[in-house]
Every structure is written in C-alpha cells, then in structure tokens.
Length: 176
Image (spheres, one colour):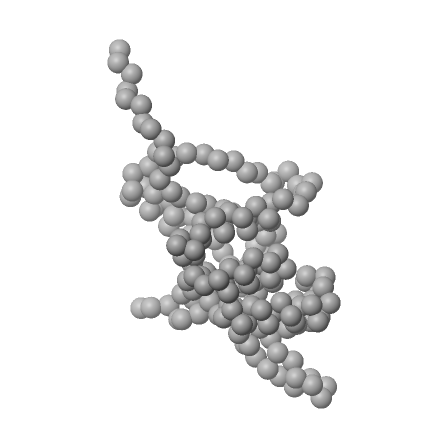
C-alpha cells in the first residue's frame, strides 16, 4: 500500500527549491512546519521575527511549491491561514548538488555556539557489506520519531547521516 502523497518525500530539483531552502530563516520555518501546520503568528513567535517578515518567507516557500495552505478560518472579521509542508520529507537530487546542500544546512545548524555537552560531531568510516549498509539505514530511519507522534521526545537534535562508499584503499592482510 502506497503512503499518502504528502508522506512521500518530494524531490528537490529546481533552483527555486534550493533558493527557498537556502535562507536560514526559511530553513528554520521548514523545520518548525515539520512538526505540524502553523499560522503566520505562530511562525512569528517561534522565529522571533515580525509577522510581515515571516509572511514574505512563507510566500517564497509557497512559490517554490514547498508549503501549502492547510486551513483557512475566520477570526474577528479577518481570515487566518495555517500553512503546512507539501510533503513529510524531501529527497535531494544529486544532479543539483543535494548532498552538499544537506551538509551545508547541517553545518549552519551546528555552527552557533552551544554550551551543550551533547553536541558531538565526528567522521567515522565503517566497513560494511551492502546488506549491512541497508540494514543500518533502515535502523536509523525506524528510530526517528516525528514530533507529531504521541509522547515526550525531549529537545530536537540534528542527525546528519550520510552513508556513501568512501574512497579508501584497502590494504592486503599482513603476511606472517
């Protein structure tokens, strides 16, 4: 059974997609909207920006096809809209530099100084068979709860996992 359309990852492959997601404010807004739909006021509160500024950034995301109007309701003689992502996740086109884009987005999140001992970044190389690599990816994906699921998930932590074949020559076993 196919998951609903909004749960299938959307492929990011146009300059408009990358331009929209390349701005740190819009990147932060997308991360907020991954939790649930939100109004301009709610996005303004979470980003600490003026409602007009948030409105501009939401329009850029809408024009790029990344955000949609999820609900419209009447409030005190006006209309209030809530916005949602068009997809539960995004898949990056490698032809458009997708891996580099993700690394740069993660780096932007890691760079602000944090007095938090839980921040840890390292590069490891694992020696895996293709089957082990697939199992690792499935294991990581199954452990990633979404904020809209029931339960307390604590604070948000970024996890950048990039599984790729590394260009590391393999030494022959030592001869005894």
